[in-house]
Length: 234
Image (cartoon, rainbow, N blue to C red; front, side, top):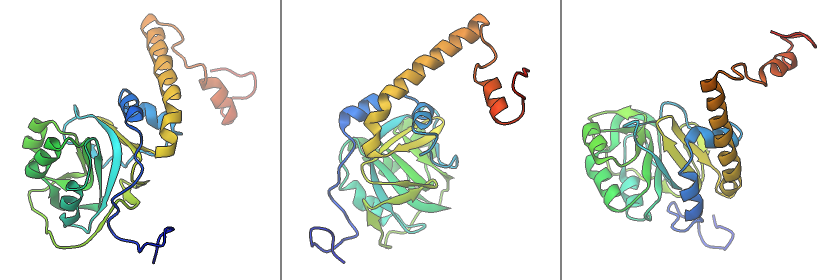
């Protein structure tokens, strides 16, 4: 099979368009929850994928990796190809029978300046990972090590945490989890994210002052749902 250029397709794609660095920098100022809300309440990975430490935060373009359960050969290959700032996104099939990355690999990721690692799989050496501070999101931990001989794919679309991730998409993670925004859509959401932050600050100020404790949208929503009749109030 060939691609649009007539060249044969390969399991390893070296070139792809990344979300621009300035967009990553601006998006990194927002919580994952803010970006998920303005993206239409979509794009978040399943809650099974969580940071090794709640203090870990990350933002960067996705560098996607598909592996077979329990094998990390292609992660090692990807680490030799990824650029500083990239977030390794590993489709590990949600396998928890062994760890696909540990302190040695994560130390190398940190040294090479990657933006983070997201694994739909397990990790190990969690105490060392917390000390390193490099952002790692995974489904859990397992002391067992992986094999290193099963082929996979690099920089193809993957499924991670129940959502589709394309190479170059914007990946943002914090204590709440991970949200992925399509590369083409990321820039258009920044103004909406900033407005939502301002709106929430105003809401917090109202609550602190004892004003508008009942949300303004609540009764209209209840009427739309048929819970309240027209003209009826709580």
